[in-house]
Image 1: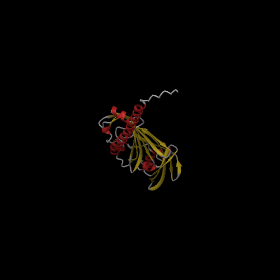
Image 2: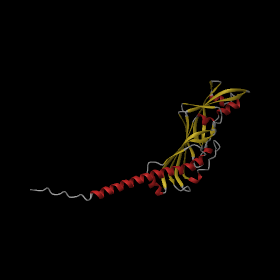
Image 3: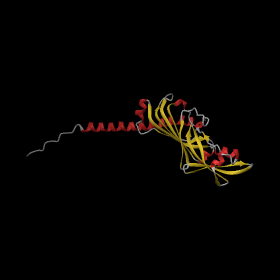
Image 4: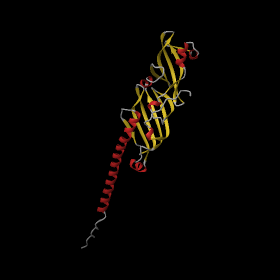
Length: 254
């Protein structure tokens, strides 16, 4: 009678299983720690941002796709995006998205660069336009409906305005005008056919929102997109300690 040889015990199986389990636990612990660290960092970053902007609305912080713990070990974060819908502008508020590159963890440090996009709807914009009145948007421009005193008679006027970025402020250029609902020749108004009041209404005018944003950020673009005025700001080598210092409005054309 013959017997089959006894199978050798695989003594390595047990240690390998233990090692795999340990690795899985370490990886799981790392990602749990990563999430906790991200959540904590988001809260730490959002508080001074809200304070600097004067916002009472919630602030969302995105720390980017890279591993936060590895970035934190280097002393700075590659890319941080901060957004809020409560940026105070005039009597209204705007939406803000701020992107910081090379953001140091030390609040006394300097970010490589910061860009910001501010979006104003009609309600926010009409509280800061020089002519006053109500605002609506149309084909890359906005229309200001106001009243002007022509010879002692309050008269409805509509100004079609195109914004551009110039000398750190938003330059408002009137491209069309209507009086009492009827289009009139813009050059005639500029030349005084409706008196100094009319000429002043259609003259190039500044619009500045720098007083609502850090002085370290400079206006770089202004355009109408759909039903919003979208403003771009940028700054390089921005000291974090300077974010609480608001900007000033320069003299238009200076």
